[in-house]
Amino acid sequence: MGFVVQRVDHIVLNCNDVEATAAWYERVLGMSRETFGPTGRTALRFGNQKINLRPIGALADDPEWVTGAVEAAGSEDLCFITEATPEEVRAHLGACGVEITAGPVPKTGALGPMTSHYCRDVDGNLVEIAVY
Image: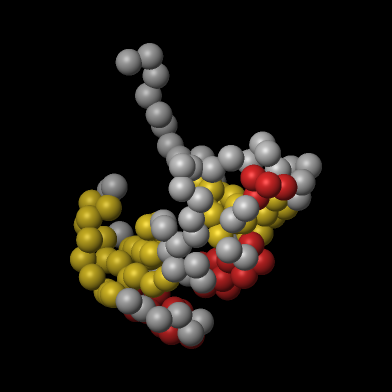
């Protein structure tokens, strides 16, 4: 093997409504919105990572912004780590009016055992919020 991958830098999330998606991730997960690139794309920053938000149909407006083989919103399963307690996660999601679909439940992440809560974002993506 000529190289080894070190980490994930960013992901691109296809969405129906960039504004609604960005607002949900800012309000519920505390991410920071930024605008980048010559066409004013939207990203959400957290830690040393980011999520670029790609509106469905973006290829028609920006031929450089290609996506996976299937352009679909709501098909992702994302896991985010927090240093909050599981009780704090549950309370915050409830205060935000976000329905918890499962949790707290024991799971195994990249670093071992964790406790997770699951919910869905505005497009229906499965969002896991986990505590090691």
